[in-house]
Length: 606
Image 1 (spheres, rainbow, N blue to C red):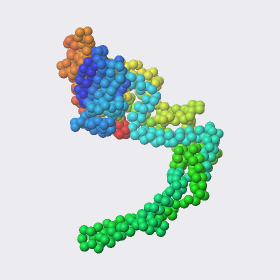
Image 2 (image 1 turned 180 degrees about the vertical axis):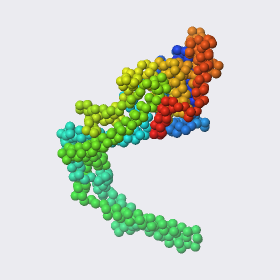
Image 3 (image 1 turned 90 degrees about the horizontal axis):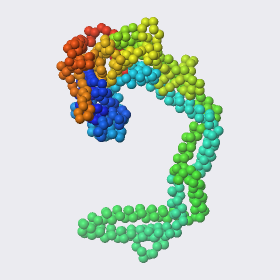
């Protein structure tokens, strides 16, 4: 959950510290006081876009700092630790986002500088911000499909994952078949060049490192006389030789004499040196043997030298054409064989690819059908849950219908797929188009939500959707930014009641202008605006119970000093307190039914 947030230099807010209740916190204030800056601060902490225009005039930068409690949020802890930051002993971490007056921003987590994307990843685990822009977003077909998928949980997630995996293989085969077919002449030419190079390399049949070995061998053969003289002299010095100078005593003979002298000595110190002399004799004997072998291996045959030089010339022809050395030539050949395997444009190869494409298409169609069926089932449950929630929002005759239909493939659609004898568009998220329809009352036609609902009704519909989805969502903190716009009267009371019940399972933060909603909060924050020296400043403070009455009276009548306004405010607070004290199990209402459905969907999603 979000424990507290500090805002400095953001909009009209100069410096404000907000401490949030783990349940339901409401933020109110006069128009222009800076309520929306609270949500703007949350967007910045969530890695949202930084705008220089939000920086307070006269300051160098705006700063938003939030302290999150991560107890039980293992995924969020993993993100923090992966970024190199540490979680405090109390299970909290501090996130900070600053925006300079020139628009540049920086992000910090746990005292360490991190990319802004890290805050975005963290917020996905901890925060869900819903505002009027989200209402417009939810009207898009792709977003409506996401609503079903979130509501259904693993019932849709599993077949969707299987569909995407097979689709990736299917597209790879389709693309390869198209490429081979459309570029058959070009590929055939490339294949001929590769085959020519491979045949040339195979004719020479080079061995790894052979070019270096030949270079060393040629050097020895060219200097054979000097090498023989040096080796023979060394061999004579070590072991003696028949052609050597009879006056030269070999090293082995000298060591033998030394061994004889020390072994016959009466001094034990000298006798102890004899084994070491014996080891030296063995070592010299081995060296002498190796020198003899080296001499025997020296060959001054001109014919053999010519043969080695010819082999070197063959290798150099390959290294001039294909790589810098023989090892590179062999690597080129390996790559050429791999490329040839994908350039076969023969009828047999194309037929095999076509068969594989058809096999994957059939498998993909099965996954698409399974996915569509899961969405259709979830659509029915989702529609019932939203309709139940709307009944408690003064829309008792309204009914939501969620349709799931397959999207037809257009002409020349590269993602066309046959599902149950119908050509459909196989997109990343399946073959389905989802639409939310609203029937405003009995006898009215079912129309798209944005066409059938008024502004206030649209807000209530969207709030009902968010409440239903919230129970299917494990995000601990939910933020609502004036989603109750255009609503009043009894419907506003029901909105407050639902947000309060939602706060039993989530931390709920609400920015509102409705006193009926504010009355149900566990904590009431007010944004105050004042002017000093011609400069407007706003601050945030927590209201005591008596101050809440004054603020609700102001929201009701625009004047906090009227007795009628205060009486109405006290009545609102009493109704809200009584409602919150009633156990959920005692409440038999459409809301309870909707909550039960949402909770079931949430279990599927875990």
